[in-house]
Image 1 (tube, rainbow, N blue to C red):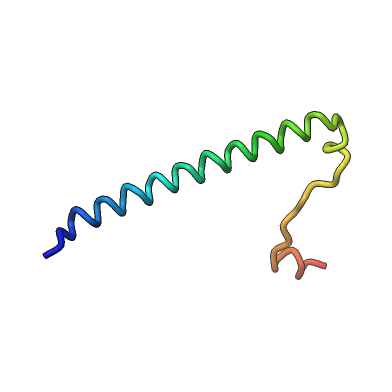
Image 2: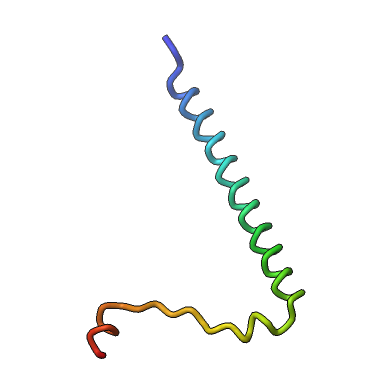
Length: 61
């Protein structure tokens, strides 16, 4: 009979490692993006800020 606890713990550890790796890759990508924005200079500050439109804001119009 398979040792389900051992299999589960192995799977859990592998999935945890994958999640940590994805978080690391995401952080590195964000860092590269921010570095590229700094290289562009003030161009990023000229862009209009993004805003969220909620239902209550739409009803005020």
